[in-house]
Image 1 (cartoon, rainbow, N blue to C red):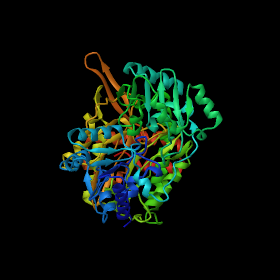
Image 2 (cartoon, rainbow, N blue to C red):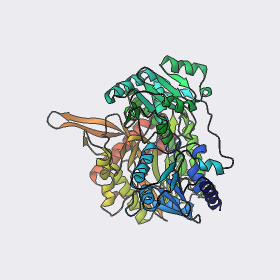
Image 3 (cartoon, rainbow, N blue to C red):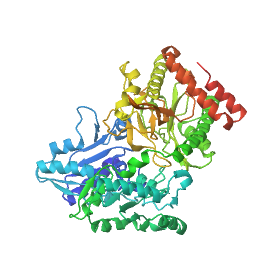
Image 4 (tube, rainbow, N blue to C red):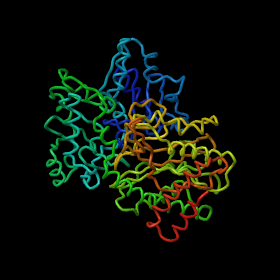
Length: 591
C-alpha cells in the first residue's frame, strides 16, 4: 500500500511539472553501486531493495528494470504493487531506452534528477530525442518532494589512508594521472566516482555503508588538484597532509561553479559523471570521454598492496574457519538463524587486527533463500537453520590493509542427490577457471566460459557474471576488469584482483555458490609464443567436503582441491589454537 501511495504522490508532482515519464535510477551523484540512505529513492518508491535497477514511472504504468541477480527478489518485493518487472539482458525484454522510444509520444516530457543520472544514460535518451520531438527536465528531484523524513546527507568524518598500506602517496598517484592525461591531450580531468577519488588522494571515510568512501568530487589540472568535499570532515592534520601532497580543498557544492569556468580540454568518464556536471561545463570547452584514468590505475595492485592484501586474507581466513567450526559444531544444538549466523561471522572478523567493518551486507541464505543470489535476511524473512540442505554465506571484511569477498556453501545436514550433484558441478566450474592458463591480452569475457562449461554440459546456467574486481580497502565490486559473458575489452593484467564465483540457483529449492578471490600472476614467457598468465588463489577457507560427490571429480580436480586445502591448512595453522587446527585438519583432509 505504501508503494502505491508513493507512486500516486509522485504522479501528482509529475502532473504539476508537466512530466509524462519520470526516471529514478539506483545511483547517487557519483555513479555508485552502493549508496547512502539519502539516495535510496528507487527503493523508497518501489519497495525493491536490490542494489541494481532503474524505475520508470509513467502517468499510467510503472516499470522496474533489474538484472539476473535480483529477478526472484524483485518478483517477491513488487508483488501487489502494480509495478511491472522487466528483466535486463534477457532476450525479449526491451531496455528502458527501447521502451521509451516505442512509447513516448510527440512533445511529451521525460524528467529525472540530473545529479543522479549518468551522462552515458542521458546521451542514450538524447538519441531518442533526435528521432522524435521529446523534451527533458533534468533538474527535478521529485522524489525529494514526496519523501517525508528523508535521511540527511552523511556527515561522517574522513581520514588519511597511510602509505604503509596504500604503497604510494597521493603525490605519486597524481603524477601518474597527469602522465596519462598528457597522452589523452586532456588539460583538465573531472572525477566524480567516490572510490576513484578515495584511491587517488589516499582518503577514506564512512559516507556509504560498508564502503569506506567520502562524498566528494575532484578536478586535476596540469598543475593543480582540487578536492571538493565538506571541509569539516577532515582534521587540520589531515588537511595539512593533503596540502603537502599538492591537493587543494574546496567545499563539496563548489564543483558546479568551478567546472563552469574551466578552460581547455576536459576529460570525463561518461558512465561515472552525472548529467548535471556535464551540463555545467563551459560550452567552449572540448570534452574527452574515456574510462577514468584512476579506474585503470587502481585495478593493478602494487607490490605493497598485494603484500598487505595477502596478510589481510589470512586474518579473514581465520575468521572463516572459526565460523565454520562454530556452525558445524552447534547446528541442531542451539538455535541459529540466518541473522545470528551473519552476526557471529562478523564477530569473528572483528577480532582480527585492522578490521574496519564488513565489506557488504552479508548474504546468509538457507534452503530456497539461496536461490536469490543477493538475498540478505531481514527480521521478516529470517530462517532458523535446520539440519538439512545448505547455508550459503557470501561475506567480506574491510581492513586497513585490504578488502575481502568470499562465499562458502556449508552443508547443514542430509543432502538430496540433486543438491550434492549441483554442489559438485559448481566446484568443478570453480576449479576449471582457477586452473586456466591464458595468454597476455585475454579479457574476462574470454575466460567466463571456463567456469560455466561443467554447468553448461548439464544444461545449467547462472544469470550473472562469474567474477568481479575487488578494491583495496575500497569497494567490494571494482572495475574495469570482470569475468562475465558481457563483452569486456579490458585485458587482464598482472596484479589485478578478481573473484571466481560460479553458482547454481534453483528457485524454490536451493542456491549454491563457491567463491574465492584470486590474483593475476605471470606463468611463463617465451619469444616464440609470448607471455602467459594464471590465477593465484588468495582466499583461505575449506570447501565443504560433505557436499562433494567425489565420483564426479576428475583426477586433476581432486589434485587441485587437495593442493588448495593444503595451502589453507599450512597458511593458517600458526594462527589457530590446537582445537581450531584439529578442526581445520579434518576439514581439509586429502581426498
